[in-house]
Structure formats: C-alpha cells, structure tokens
Amino acid sequence: MGTQIGVIGAGGWGTCLSLLALKRNHTVRLWEVFPDYAWTLQERRENILFLPGIRIPPEIMVSASLPEVVRASKYLLIAVPSRYFRHTLQRLKPLYRNQPLLIATKGLEVQTGMTMSAVLKQLLPDSSFAVLSGPCIARELACGCPSAAVVASPDLKIASIFQKHLSSSSLRLYTTVDVRGVELGGAIKNVIAIGAGIIDGLNLGINTKAAYLTRGLKEMVRVGVALGGKEKTFYGLSGLGDLITTAFSPVSRNRSFGEALITSSQEKFFQETQMVVEGYFTVKSLLRLIRARSIDAPITQAIYRIVYLKHNPRQVLEDLMNRRLKQE
Image (cartoon, rainbow, N blue to C red):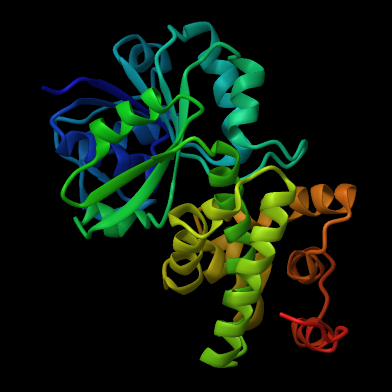
C-alpha cells in the first residue's frame, strides 16, 4: 500500500526520486520553485533541463505551490542544491506538520560549513529526519539500472521507514546511525572528483588516477573522522562507493568540471551547464574547517588553489608529488 510523498526540488535528482517513489506505488507530488518551469514539467512530462529523455508519468503531480505539496504529503524528500537548502527550509518552516524528512542534498553550506542536517536541526529542531547518500547518478537510476545507497538517521526507525518506502529492484537501501559520516562522505567526494576530472583533462592515464583516488580516499577518511564521522562509513556506499561513481562517470558534474578546467575554462563550463557543481562550493567551506582544526589535507588544498587561486594544475600536481616522503 502506497503513501503520500512530496519531493521538494525538481532538478535531475528530485525528478529521479519522484520516479523511484512512484515505482513503489506511492502518491507523488513534485515541487518546482519556478512556476513557468513547473508548467513545462507538467505539460511536457519531461525534465528537459536536468533529465532530458526520461518520461515523467502523469501519476506524478508537478506543482509550484509549496503549501499544496507539503499539506498533501505524509513524508517529504528534499533534493535542492546545498546553497538553496537553508532558504528552502525557511519557506517550508511555517508549512511544516512534523512529517519525517529525507535529506537528499549533498554538500556543506558555504557560509557556515554546516552539513544539511545541521541546518535542518537549526531551523526545524524537532523534526524527524534521515539523510540519503551513495552512488546515485540520477539518469542511471531513472533508467532502472541497479544501484545501492545508504539512509542515515539518529533514529533507525526513521531510517527504516525511508528504506522501506524507496527500496526497489533497482535501488537497494541500507541503514546506519552515522549521519555525520554519511554527509561528510557525500560532500568530500565531490571535491576529490574535481581532481579526478583534472587528471582526465591532462590525459595522465589510469595509474595517476588510481593513485590519486587512493590517496583521496585516505584524505576523505582522515578529514571525515576528524570532523566527527565514523571511519567505516567512509569505506561504504556514501564514501568510497560515491567517490568511484563521481570520479569516473562521464556525466558527473564535479568530474566534468575538473576536466573543463583543462580542456576549456571554468567560466565557459558554468555558462553552458544548467547543473550545480557542489564540489565548487564545498571546497571553500571544507578548507575553512580543515584550517580551523589543522587537519592534514593536501588534496583539498590543491583543488582550492586550482579552482579559486587559478594556480597551474601541472605545477600543483608537481608540488603534491614532491612533498616529504613518508610511510603509507
């Protein structure tokens, strides 16, 4: 028996989550912030900007009215970019009726370095929530390609609710209580994936990429544990699993952005893409957290220098290779 699910955010990931919920026979309402584009989604039954070629069944109701979607939903899934997460919650707050919330947004808030669940607890302190993360390229899932992800919540009963309502033959969900680790893995991997794209753009080969990702995973674990996550979480779906996907997928926004830094330009990439590159914003807030705690994170620092200080990628790579030698 299905239930009423509201998906807040009609990007590629929000659209995909709507399709996954519908697959489990739930009544699904999808909220799009811009009325004109909500009308386009409703009429064309295709997300032409963020998930072109994937049909949106008529059973999914698309609306630009947040009150309508919230009022009609027993559970809420939030899938907006991290830089809009706080503003979206501020709009949601007066409408909220204590529904369990699933955070499907990855990243850190640029201004504060807070995870999305920390922002949620600040604005809706009494809410029951879980976080979804893992190797989930929206197009692949929307096409029915199998994958797995993790649902984290301080209350395993809440995690299990979302696990039950969204798991299917194409998405296997696991549960954990390590919310901090799951969110940090989903944020840090985007930064590392930018470097993977830079390596692709420089045509440096698979040895370089394998070595880089191995050390990148080591840095993810070191930073993530220092910031409060559990070590084993970073070797799971929301850490290593998501890193592999983001670092190798040809449609990964973060990897593609890194590649464009070599083959094109940062400015041109942003002009041509409609998608949000979470790693671009995360590296700035992550660097502040790292410096404040004196955490050793040479890869994060290197990506920041390339992206924001415009340092030459080849010189930055040489600097990484010429650091003091040490044990693995």
